[in-house]
Amino acid sequence: MFAELNRHLSSIPSQLLQRAADWAYLSETRSSFEIEKEAPNGSKAERFVALLKNAGTFDRLDEDSLCEIQNRIVSTVYSQAVSYRTEQNWLANTTGAGFRRITYVPPPPETLDDLMSGLLRMIAEAPGDTNPLVAAGTASFGFVYLHPFMDGNGRLSRFLVHQQLIRSGVLPNGHILPISAAMLQHERDYLQA
Image (cartoon, rainbow, N blue to C red; front, top):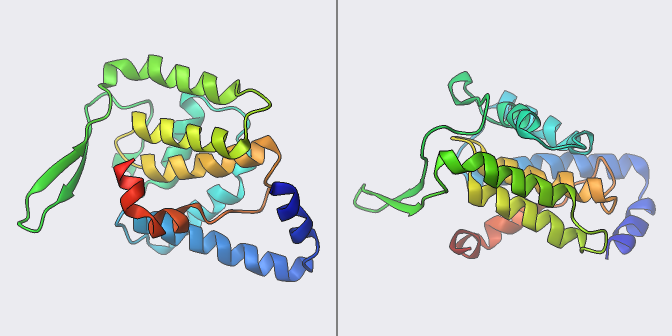
């Protein structure tokens, strides 16, 4: 599948491919923020596009690099992380009556160091014969399941899909897949998972 994608991409004139890639980055950014029910301002969207364009430069993932990525994603300095969260967080939806219904409670903060170490080890040591889509999806799902930050977890998990596909060599650096747009089309399934 990826070989076919790369053959197709190489047949497109570079100027046209660049215009399409610019649109795809903007579309992925808008869709990613739409999943979060957030309207990004211009600078926030630009930062996320720049982060996606540089996904291939993050070879090694650890707490410091994940904090750096998270800080580029969130908009306020008060939401920026210097470490994994030290408070319990949760996901909630607002009901029609204005009440908040908790839909997911991530692991407690005191377990995050061990859990994140295991996840990052699994990401770094994924067997070479693992399908790159499976490895990227596992990295993304594992990250959002652990929810190690107070803000930016969903966008960071979708960034990880691109970072992992570029790292595996199946997606050329500078190219992007419409991960967030696909999630929006299947949002109910995504949220149920």
